[in-house]
Image (cartoon, rainbow, N blue to C red; front, side, top):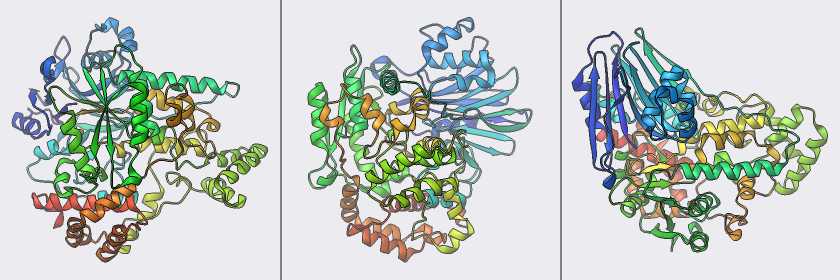
Length: 623
């Protein structure tokens, strides 16, 4: 985990060293760190890296090749080191070569295409002095953030928005399009470039930025493909390959660590990670963290987490979720987030994570976030029925309609209409076959002005080439980064996501739908792959705890704070929400009757963030 950034002058003039310094000073890490910068001619790079405890300080300086004509700042980690070393030997790569040096060698070998050859989580910026050229890139899943700004022939780029703001003479105006996107989608749009600040944009996952000859261009370098499932392949082959690839994903994320922590909620995703990690021999020490609830019992899964830890002999620590329920210290939480995010509601628990993992070095935390999109969640719908109809496979369609009708318990005609006919006429697949709904508290004039219904209905992910179901899966994968753990926890530990391993995602996309979508069974592919790995009672469990119960507890406990947020609503001042409708929705939620709890959490955290921005002076957008 590092905070990287830099500046490039498009007119070729000398870079402002003070600007680069301000960007580096603005980087926020919640661990002791060292900061280094480099400037030469029209370009400057900076990097802030945490100390690694007994291993010594991280190499925070921007790195260069042997000629020092190519300079790089890199945040991330590479998984395909062995393959890269084999291909890049003539460029000096050896088994002990660092990830940064491998990236420089990859650029020497493949130029702009180097990012597509890298498998891992990364964001980087490379200055090629010989060509007077800047290349920035972000990994295909968007695990590492990267932002950019262009002003007066100066390009700024950084992994934190606050670094780019530090390079601006004044805070940029606020961008109402960002509010429209957030209200339409409820989560961070990984496939949207806009940020809260006008003129500051997000480099999308799988994209690169190139600045040369006085111009800037942004290109997509990576597109997800669903591949072709072999019709004659034994289904067990897919299951075995998934288990092998998933095990490799966990192992690669434990590389180079003295100690690794992992979430262990008791659910299938985190339990799978802990079970695979615990069975590795000779690896780093593993400890698990479980959030437990004594009062919010419907959110408690301690018995399942305890079963996994006991069976595998894993050291397990527990955090009291009742002590810091959702919305605790929300007005304090928002200052750690670069942009509004629903995860700010869970700040209290994240702080407990920090204290538990504290000590020398940089803690590594494994989490199951992302599995819902990769291996299908409990909300999985039979969207593949539309493809059977489109291809004229009427016999298979009739059999599948019958299977899903029995599993869903609704009339056959409703199954056909919702999951077969409707998807054929609409791209609104991200809502599991249902058309997306705008929250009731969004003001009508604002919704019409910004065309929120159309905005919610249409994503900007490229369609898959094979059909409706594959497009649906590609869109879900493309939106993963909106759910990643940003904010205070990201700045205090190195969060790693085994399910967001590019080869694993590619395999899941290429797996036949008969293995991914099984009536009455969630995450069927993962369940089969974990046979003999997970404790059987955990692998077979069908009911999960609900985080909603804890959220309702937090709503009641933090009611005075939330009521003040609504009373001072910046969204209402902007005309984006109807204050009374929002207040009514909050009152219903306090009583345990929220119709859209996720949308309400997203709106409240957005409003709290806006109010914090206004208090600290980022209020130019109000004019």
